[in-house]
Image 1 (cartoon, rainbow, N blue to C red):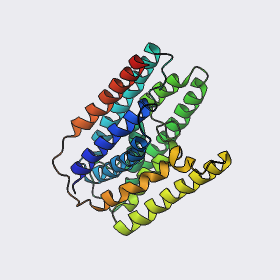
Image 2: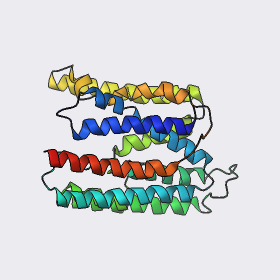
Image 3: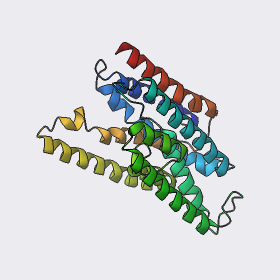
Image 4: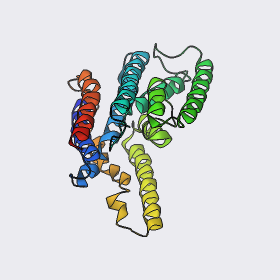
Length: 265
């Protein structure tokens, strides 16, 4: 199965998930179950894209533009619908941009790499990245007093590994896919441990509520393990690429679902 095929599967699963998110009162919970498979597949494809792309800077620039568009649009929609039942918190581009930036910096330390887009001074780049992350994190923390919409705006413009969608744990997952995804055995081990930790966390939270059924009703992030068989079907081929589809479909379908959910509400 090519990377393009995996992206199309992830796109459909993402749509189902977001329908369940914005219309949670009228959709079955299994919409969200299926949606748990989407983000890991996209991150897996991101890792493969970062391996094969001719220009990591150009790849990162596209992700940043997507993040900025989502951050600004989320802020504008929050002003348009201040009492929205489901806010626009989605911005996977911000998470992907952080992962791509970290991979670009870390890989630039590799002396054996023949890539032309390696950073000439990775130490300086790492220092700048750390400084920007610290400042943007402080800005987001300060902006929380004004509301989440301001945090989403700042994070969209300057993606932060703490305030991006999924926070640090999803950034870690992206790095797992990049550094362990080259080996099926390592992929299974690393991703399996990650999902096991998610399951343990779900059990603990459900136990605190005294309702073990919450493991499947509310705390179902661990179900992402279901995406592993699809990853193992990856054949190393890019397939017929149409990257613009995702970059356009992602914001458009979220805006449409958000507006429709508010109009119906």
